[in-house]
Image 1 (cartoon, rainbow, N blue to C red):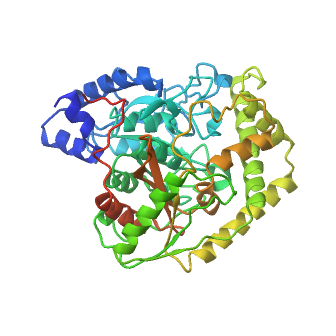
Image 2: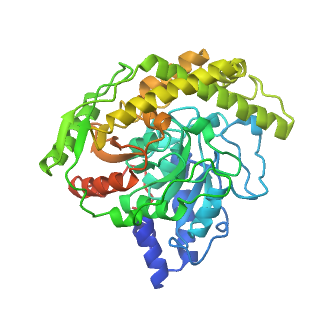
Length: 476
């Protein structure tokens, strides 16, 4: 196997090649290190690595020997420094044990070779932390790779890795998937373990999984990691059959709502809206009932609830870092907007936090009622294709509320599913006139991953994206 052949394969195909003896896991790891070394100077997507050899993994896992990377946020691996995108952690702290999800990744056979970049503490729609520098988009290096899982997405899109860890508190799996032309599923709340450090990260809005190039890889990985551990606050019923079995299955005739206007009233690029319309036409031609409809909720209370919850969580995270390291947070070791959000979060009262959680419940109930009349909601993933570098500047001199508004104005379609706890998936169904990927989002009610994967696989076949390749790529 040469580098071009390696870069063309998804995780499922690579696992099959290793299992058949066509190529050894050691040879694949060497190709992955070569591929990362080839593209990373242009992308700056690696926070640590690539390692001389992969972290230990099960040789019996479904993905045994498949190269992988973990994002430098929430999840961690024993003995591997974590920085969370912040200078406050210096060169990083070294955790003594794996998180539960890292255990699952190892059990699945994934061969972790690197740690990928993220914005500081994950609160940005791009990945340009001062701790690492800007991560660039492989389709156009003058543009953002998105956030907060931008490093993982850039490496997967560039053919350096077939799949990589990502997490999502307001769109951080789906936004970089859209920016980089990938598949990004945000599972239901509680579907994938976040322990033992967290019960429900970001007050239940944060979830874990990955970015990939194919629907089948996403489905197969979900089969491997969707387990509960003792003490988890949520235990979801397993699916009726493996999620991988949904790929290629008939979704039946569905009621699909389409919405392309920003709930915030902010700008939506016409090319993005057109990509959603094109997907809607394909679904309607396939026999589904498609109509204009949207959940109805008030944006300003929704935005304020997000602001309180995000800032309160950031303040708590920083307090934990201070206790762990003995280093006090300050404007000298936090980016300006992070410091503003932490200061605001420290001021949030119990009553304000309770009110924010109450507003979150109001939105969840409204969305729940909406999905009694519709099976799926089709929207843009992001308001525009990938933004130019620096457009979302976390080191700008902005008040905390202004920073939150700027982020949510740019990414208005994803955070609804974080507040409701329902699943949503971004698919790379469009491309702008400037060659940047356009993501289309499908969302459903809680625990509708099976249906989402069925429809996603249909769209992957009907509107294929596999032949598109970014300018920065490990092949060629």
